[in-house]
Image (cartoon, rainbow, N blue to C red; front, side, top):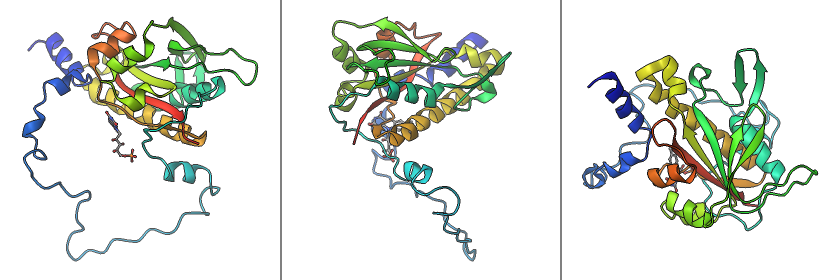
Length: 258
Ligand SMILES: Cc1cc2nc3c(=O)[nH]c(=O)nc-3n(C[C@H](O)[C@H](O)[C@H](O)COP(=O)(O)O)c2cc1C
């Protein structure tokens, strides 16, 4: 295998087309092998050290401890749309710029080598109105610009919900959400530095982004659910991505839960 073929194969692991090549009927779970333990057992004769109570001692109660403690995947959302300020906050929390100096742009999430291969696309199925006199966001497809903290309108396909449905294999909770975050990756941004060692860290980067979405959503009465099962070609086509130099790797619907 030459370098180009090796890189193509490695990029393949970031795509959900891998699911189509996987024979799930032969997994150990499908064959009835018992589930592996969720924790390694304590070696015989050893006693773990109990950790002290941290509630009320290390951070103000009801803040970060509540948000982390209540984090869960939410698949039911209220009809209420998100407003533009909430969208703005969620984009900042997941990919926003924390500090920009000459030659270095730091974000609210970490990224291996600060390469940030991820692009954020947003599908809004309902208008997100501004509460503070800023711009309202119309339904359709958008791309986030972290440097400007702005959104670029990409248009609204005639059958937006149908196109989202196709991209997410008709998962009802995604189609019903007022906003769906689609994360694409431009692998070369990381390959430029790390070559074949890139793809593992690109996947790790995506996890940090989605975790921030869970926590930020929880802080504003919203819920989300990570989704790695989707139709690769339909999701790429939704945002006119070429599927090679840029393709969807992960997505998450967001909606109000209270
Ligand atoms: C990498 C990853 C992929 C996931 N993919 C899906 C998915 O395709 N569909 C879905 O409904 N949930 C998906 N989830 C959510 C998990 O099912 C969920 O996190 C898990 O059941 C634990 O539940 P909790 O998040 O409420 O603790 C995914 C989560 C992760 C971290």
